[in-house]
Structure formats: structure tokens, C-alpha cells
Length: 149
Image (tube, rainbow, N blue to C red; front, top):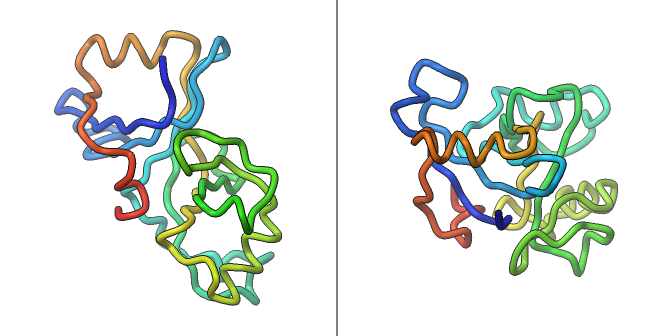
């Protein structure tokens, strides 16, 4: 399956973590799939985390229920954030987080350029495809709207 697309949860996922979730799928290969919930704000901002207390109050998103001890990010500024993996068009996964934070703090990168997540969503090989086939997810949205949510 391709990467760099959105999935929206259906009513089959009501009363679960994924109720009303909009996902961005950043990886899908022989090891499984990885994505992020892009439409659920985390209740704290990055400056409320101990190691980033000197940062500006930049929003965090609940990326998913897996590994909520770590931060992940996607962005569209490879000119300022090196080392990211291209996902699709001009959207990259990860890279130099120190550089990203520097540019966030000096205002050269905004929420229109980067999304920072606590945790991620993960599926074993073919598991996501099975969930799509059973009707838990649909393909609703243009990927260019990623940073508008």
C-alpha cells in the first residue's frame, strides 16, 4: 500500500481511542504501518515538558496510543530540517529535531510547517489493510490539508 495518505475512522471505531480520528499514514512496508492521529490536540504544549521548558508554547498532538514516551514529527521544511525521510510530495518524517525546535522558537517554522506528536499508531503487516477492508477506515481527505487540522 502507498504512504502519505489520510484515513478517517468510521462508526465501527466509535467508543475507541480512534473515534473521530483522522490519520496520516507515514510508513507502510513489510514490517507493518505507522501513522499519526493529526486532529487530536494533546492537553499540554511542548514548553510544559521538562526538557523543553524554555521553548515557546507550541502545540503537541496525540499521535497515537503506541510509545507515548517519545515525540515524533512530520514537516514540510527539508530546507531547514535535515535528515527527514520523504513520505510524499513535500512531507517528511522526522529529521534533526534540535534544528526543528530552533526554527520553531525563532518563528521561521510554524504550525503550518510541522506537526509534533506524542506517540504513534502502529499496525502489524497487513493489519491496517484488513481494518480498511472491514470498513473501520475510509480515504476521505487530500494530503495537502495535513497541516490545516
